[in-house]
Length: 294
Image (tube, rainbow, N blue to C red):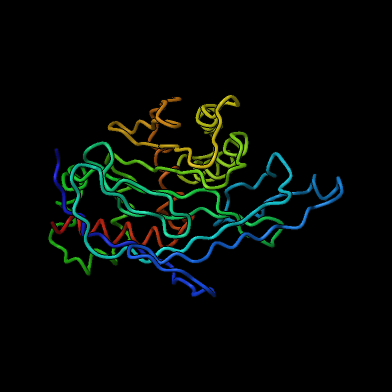
């Protein structure tokens, strides 16, 4: 059994104080508010249910496959989880504070959780939908082996300001996993496939050049129509040694592709210059510094 100290910190949004909130000894949980979104009528509106797109927010640019009618949005607030967690194996976990989705602090025995975040998407420009929570993991030993020579002499404060640290992590052959946990219960695998076509396609053109259509198709074709992804489903996108991207859905491997540009493109979505969650990227930077200072 592996015994690890996990004194990492994860950024937490401020917790609002709703009326009649109840408090427990472990978490401060707001009274859950369910607000129904008014039914959207008319075939024209239904056909035009498209999600907003920006260069920094490319995910789910295509319309959801079904009408988002009578959508019930629930928000749970948890008290911040700062401080030190002692791990025994991978039993300890950290929760994404808004959704409560739980991520093990250690994955695959040696990959440490560096940051957690939330992927949101605007619907009709009116309401943000929590699509999935995600965790960013990297192998402790690989980080020290690959990055210590260049960064080992720097202080923690210097490392936290070094943009090149994240760049080198994304470029290097460090084993990493991006774990996605589905929050939105009506998300279809077709939507996931279309979203990656857009977001990963943009990154591939940036890092691998324009002639990567076949590579993108090989990746997105792994998300076949027969796969179901209800709320709580887990998708792991893992970069193994040799720049092999391995994709699993709820523990079942659905494909692997050896490609450095593809691995870089996937990781860039979460800790690159235009990440899905800025605070998650900042946490990864701070916790990378901690690993190198151990």
